[in-house]
Length: 146
Image (cartoon, rainbow, N blue to C red):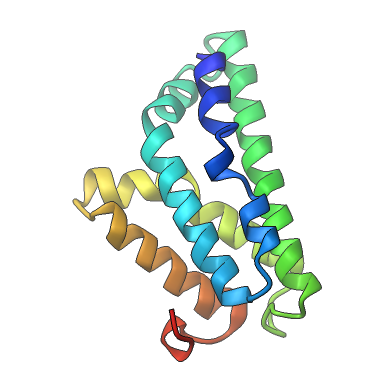
């Protein structure tokens, strides 16, 4: 299970570097939302297994902890990149931006909307992108061209 989790998380197309390499904050959120969607598409079952084994299997609990720490570190890097460009809304601190995007981009929200409520992965990605633009940048995604 640890090897599978590592294979998914280490995939080059899911790297936060794609967000950091972009200079436009809206595009950064667009890229980040796409990466999160792809990560959740590939990992929701793995994360469900890891989460359900938490506390009952030391190895799987450790893998779950490393998964969550890696997710948080990637989100922090993305939000730090936005902050360094002066893109975060004046009402949002870096720590708040990290916490908000971390929660919204996690597998719990993805599973609830896509697996349980029947949203398409495209719909989830658009929602995440739009919400991130409003909450983190302080404007709607529609104010900027795609």
